[in-house]
Length: 192
Image (tube, rainbow, N blue to C red; front, top):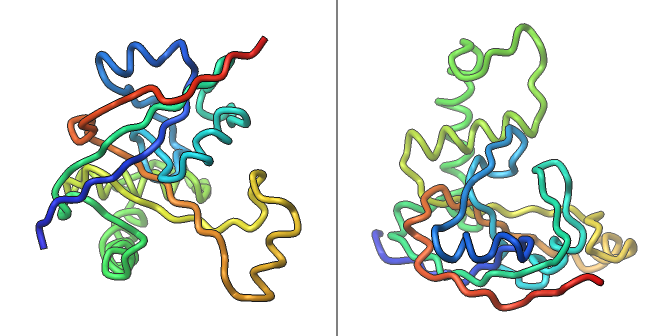
């Protein structure tokens, strides 16, 4: 099915970056530990983007002094999206990894390991980059269940065991700026 997919997504950044992003687009800062490959990251949930601007990780060179949230419209054909919220896409993700990526990895064709173990973050990022390059995905939507996320109250992880209902975080990694069809500053918080 080659239908259009249109999403509203939120990107947290520093206010200093907003004009450049809105005028010329996003710039990916490559890092071997990105969750879903080397691309531009968005949350589907505004409140997570807002949380991220006040609690950023410094692993990716982020220094937010004055937080800003940019709302974007992302539009592309469905066949350019690997959406891990969908069963068929998730099974494809796993099957390609097992049948195609692992043999390349073990033959040393993807990562030079110098006989060292590859950490999970590097492996995941490299695999998502591979999917982008080989299959021409313009975006991957990933889901994460981490009951101890810092934005979640500490006792909420136990709630899952009571009802077997969990909060699943969704992030988007956009590899192709052209699918970001609009950008709008919607929030900014200046620190004093």
